[in-house]
Amino acid sequence: MRHCSVQVRGLLTRSELDRYNALMEVGKYLEEQQRYDLSNIVQQEVDILIQPAIERLKEKSRQRDRMTEEYLRSMDIEEDEQ
Image 1: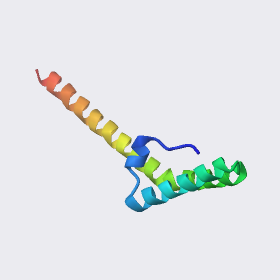
Image 2: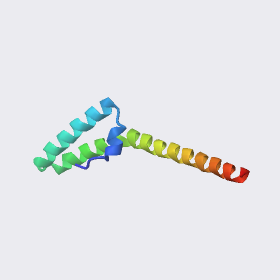
Image 3: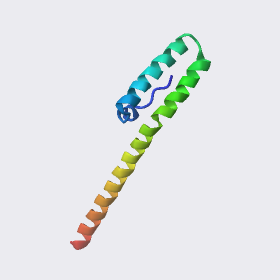
Image 4: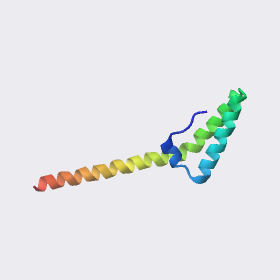
């Protein structure tokens, strides 16, 4: 089973995180039983589950980029005034 990044896990809601942990536990058990056909299905469910958190992470990055751009613009304006 592939884990998602710490950043993505940090953006999961409590219910998403509980479900994520349960699915990972089931997937690990299935892999121990060498039921890779079933653990693959569980991995697909994990991938679907974490999509909203990935989108939240992308939005945080876009927001940070916008803030950086605004800051750089304000620095350009201050330099022009001097």
